[in-house]
Image (cartoon, rainbow, N blue to C red; front, top):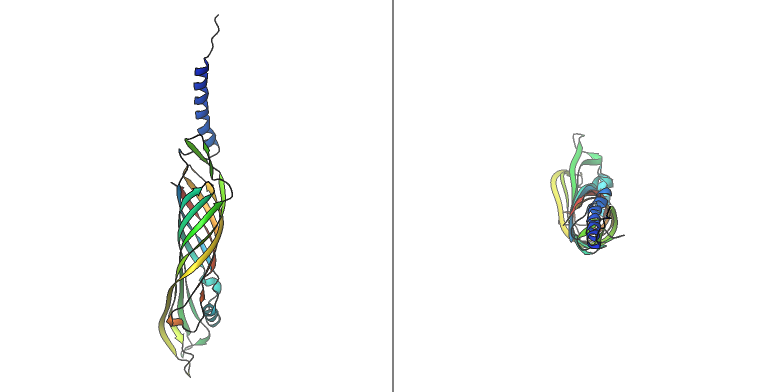
Length: 253
């Protein structure tokens, strides 16, 4: 019987088809998938807890005179980041975040004329608007030829940034006027709003769950100190520094 041979051209076509079929299969087997181009940007939303350090004269006063602790000024945090890719391991990130707390309290050692507690509510909000450089410890993915990009399974990162922070400290309720001879109790509403410069450092990791989607977790230290308004004259600058831990999800674009 005659022998059947395969021409080099046909063999090349079959080999190319096999490679093209194997690449997506390999990607799917690792849970990564692939994109037809390297991502140029990403959008991330995170939520978690932001522990305010609550340093300075004002926080020292309210925690000593009222039934408040420094930990009461930590609270729920939300953050969103828009990142533009500069290199396989470097992003420029614009971020917006919010954290807030609200706590009822009363004076520790004082009561009104009816032997009832002197109560008030204290709230703190912080809203940083920042720009950061985000560096990945290794490339977030690899190019396969000119038409495919396969994301890495995990991408740890660190970063530094600067920005501006809006803050609001607010107290409403009953207070003691220590400048009067009988320490009179009065009802009032005190507030201070301000903008100040802020700096931060962060570290975290991204874990891919799809070709365009990933989950992320991050720890961030933020430094900021702000001047207080006229309602709190006589106190030094308010410490707005804190440490946040957040997690969320992101999408590549």
